[in-house]
Length: 350
Ligand SMILES: NC(=O)c1ccc[n+]([C@@H]2O[C@H](COP(=O)([O-])OP(=O)(O)OC[C@H]3O[C@@H](n4cnc5c(N)ncnc54)[C@H](O)[C@@H]3O)[C@@H](O)[C@H]2O)c1
Ligand SMILES: [Zn+2]
Image (cartoon, rainbow, N blue to C red):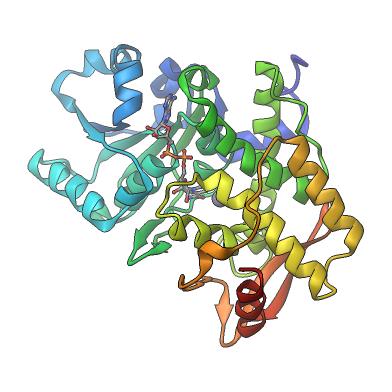
């Protein structure tokens, strides 16, 4: 790895400005912006599987703080990213007399940070909050940009807030225990950043240091949109590439496919839709297909599974849905498309 990669220039500056640190986990309290906070209590909100695998390492830095530290273990899957789970965490905070001047630390993947972020932003109208992502998805995307979300009534991320953590600490050692399928899910978002930016990250996955550089690079791409449109009113929609159809696929499969698998299929079918309506040139569709192959993803043959599934999109105004389309690799634009056009096209693709 280029030893200066995190040490010079715009990537380092962007990461520093947004309090994103590539550091060993043990340095969270001492070497990040968390060290400037004063807080009475710490609540570690830890994914159950991550706790099982990394318990000793996770708890060790906090032992000296004695009973000022509490641990809440979260069983993580998409079906439990709900208000009920958030309420269990509120109950725990109240039962342990956790005051506003506390620090919640999310340790896990995107499910953990979405639940913990929502609770941190609402408990006593806002508690201090830090994220330690332990999945590739969390490092490259879910832990970044200040959004959180809970699923509600079969709608992905129907409830959520914008709330920035004080620090995001990325320690890629945690990826050593992540299984292949979950690693690949994170690759799905990295593919999205490849297509949006025109940087081809498909060759990075055999080297730990190259993966680390790719994570940092994707984060800076995400943050460039977040900086321009934090509240997701226009240009940040671009980060939603593949997510309109992707979210519907996740719901239709009862969350048995990963978020990354859904997004990759969403990118493919949305690009095909764009092609059919003259928004996306044929050669771009071919390039997207080739990129998906290079990243090693398999595609669904059709959208049959979306039969009887309501299609929602939060970027909707009246009959128009604002969807990102790749005009070319590295050139993604938000285009308004009639809801009925989208539904009709999906129906014909079944
Ligand atoms: N808020 C955002 O901006 C944003 C962005 C992208 C994705 N998301 C959300 O993130 C969620 C997906 O996140 P995810 O893919 O991290 O899923 P996840 O949190 O469910 O983690 C995936 C699986 O990996 C396990 N795991 C986590 N870390 C591990 C480790 N180090 N070793 C072994 N196992 C580990 C978990 O227990 C879980 O079974 C989705 O709900 C998606 O909507 C949110
Ligand atoms: Zn996503």
